[in-house]
Image (cartoon, rainbow, N blue to C red; front, side, top):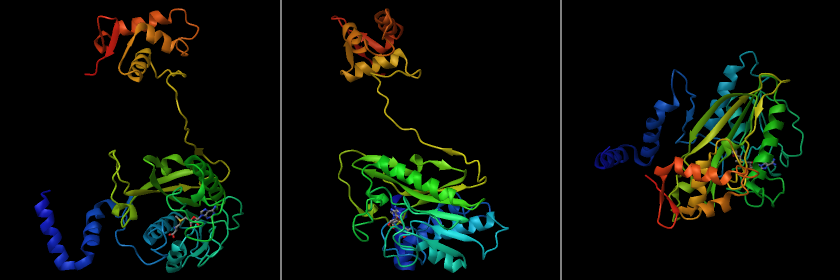
Length: 349
Ligand SMILES: C[S@@+](CC[C@H](N)C(=O)[O-])C[C@H]1O[C@@H](n2cnc3c(N)ncnc32)[C@H](O)[C@@H]1O
């Protein structure tokens, strides 16, 4: 769309609606994605205007509408559960958004947090050590985003070793979070739901998707993407040398306990594959030779390749591995160019 047209629209909207113009446009612009087929909960959520509840000054708070929409959906899924028997639990409640929403909807809500000075709920409750004494129909788990915002020692009290925002490494955080996911899921009533709200992070230039790295448990009902508005990081100017993709979404994963005895799960497997020391049937000789050449500047002699690959599992114990290397280069002649000194150069087309 032409920038002049957009500018004109912006000016007209500002004249008409003042400072609220942007929220109005964002709401209109996301409406087609946030409501569909007569439903007002879809796999995309966007709340440019935060409703009342919790504390918007509490860093990492979530919009009350997220809680309200998930609660309404779960109530719809459990028509036989009487409203007065329904129990909602938030084990990392922060500023108390969950209870404020539940109160408005006339539902019982129990809140815990490691923070000993909670506005409402059980403070000083440690998700890694303490018992979940309440079996709920819905658990809403909104953990820290690794160490992006440090809670103990910065938002409340002094640094606590079991604060999930104070893990030494990202993978220690994921391991602890997976423990909490299992614990909270097991604590659900049969048929209950676990909703986990997590974000993607980038620290020291390294991107991690928490949603993609945590375990799944029970029956996955939905993976909802949530647009983020009014984010502190959106106002920051980045001067790094490398291009990067700013994070403007979060993820809400919804799991149901359809069977309380047989519980399906899946874990992410992570590690490092060393091309020079390990083999895989997905890696051919051709790929291995190209990789070795790239490592040494895009060229190699036969002798250099023999030496680099003599101990590789593809070559180890094989009398004819040198012939295999030469054969591979001849088979892929068009990918390599030989100079008058017998050095082969990788050709990129
Ligand atoms: C992202 S905030 C939750 C925000 C909340 N949904 C809101 O709207 O205000 C995460 C919370 O997890 C709490 N937390 C961190 N580690 C914990 C642990 N081991 N046990 C219980 N709560 C913990 C922090 O104190 C923090 O309040």
